[in-house]
Image 1 (cartoon, rainbow, N blue to C red):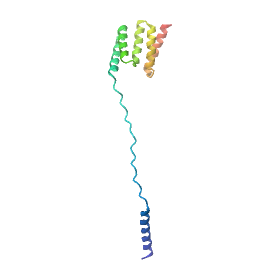
Image 2: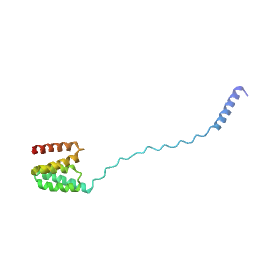
Image 3: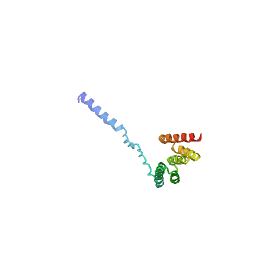
Image 4: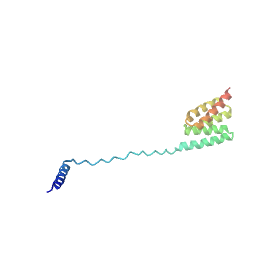
Length: 138
């Protein structure tokens, strides 16, 4: 055998010998996909909430018609069904203002402020109402 062929043969034997010494690599573990969190859909409004919102609208219309006593009755029903709706308190304050009972208007204005503090548009209305109440009290 020629030297060149001997070198190739030795290289091949060495490669095979080394390959037999190598440890088999364990298969890679599959990486689980990142958990995807589906956004939760908001819960549908409760029947009490829906009824309260309908009463709120009815009370608002009664106020527009100048029927403060009727509006107060309707808005109080709305609050009894769903007390977290701050608009009811705002409209009750308006109704009491129309009746000239400033102390009640002030009380309901403060409740409206508590319930509507996260709503900029409504807070502007509540602040304007509070200013009108303060002007009457002077």
